[in-house]
Amino acid sequence: MITLYTWTTPNGRKPAIMLEELGVPYQISTVDIGKDEQFAPSFLAVSPNNKIPAIVDEDAEGGPLAIFESGAILTYLAEKHGRFLHASGPTRYKTLEWLHWQIAGLGPMLGQLGFFGVRSKDKSPLAIDRFVEESDRLLSVMDKQLAGNTYLAGDEYTIADIACYPWTIAATITLKDVLAESLATKPAVHRWLKTVGERPAVQRGMAVPKV
Ligand SMILES: N[C@@H](CCC(=O)N[C@@H](CS)C(=O)NCC(=O)O)C(=O)O
Image 1 (tube, rainbow, N blue to C red):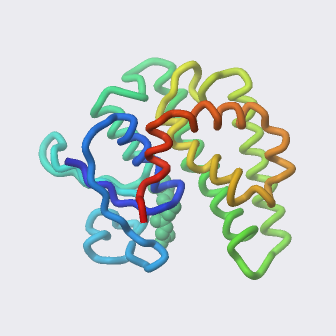
Image 2 (image 1 turned 90 degrees about the vertical axis):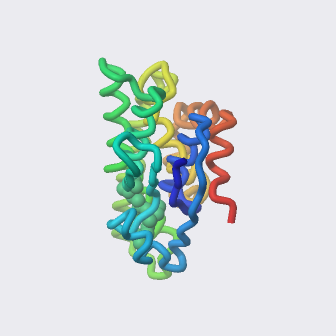
C-alpha cells in the first residue's frame, strides 16, 4: 500500500492525480501546512525538506521506500507501473524536459506570484511586475508548445501534463486577476486545460485531500 502525504495545493495534487490515473490503492495522510504540520518529526522522517507531497511505498522493491519531491514521485510511479513515461526514446526525454520545466520554472514562479500578487498584504510593484512577466513568459512557452502538440510531450498524455495541470488551472483561478492579460492570449493552454480537466482521474485527484 502507498501512503500519500499531501495537502490542498497544486504540488500536493500531482501525485493524487497520478495514483488515480493508475488506479492503484493508496491511503492519504493529510499534512496541514497552514498549521505547520510539515514540521512534525514524524513527517520530517518521510520528507526532510518539510514540504508536501511525499509518499511511502510499503511494497517497493527491496522494502518500504519514502520519496519526497513531486517530480521524483511521478517518475517513480510511472516507472513502477510502466505508464505515462516511455522507458526510452525521444518521448521519454520530452516528458522529462517538461516535467523539470514545471518543477524548476512554472511552479516556483506562479507560487511567488501568488505570494506577492495575492496573499501578501504589502504589495511590492517591483516583485509583482517581475513575477507577472516571468509567469507570462512561461505560459507563452507552454502555449507555443501546445499549439503544435495535443499534450506537452507530443501526442500522448504523460506525467508532464499531470505535473503542469494543477498549477496551470490554479493560475486561471487564484491568479486570474494578476494574470488576466496573459491568460487572454493563451488559446492553446485553455484548449489543453479543457482536455486534461475532462479526465475522470484528474477530477478525482484534484479533489484530494477532502478536508
Ligand atoms: N519542488 C517541490 C515543491 C513542494 C512545495 O513547495 N510544497 C509546498 C506546498 S505546495 C509546501 O509543502 N510548503 C510548506 C512549507 O514550505 O513549509 C515539489 O515539487 O514537490
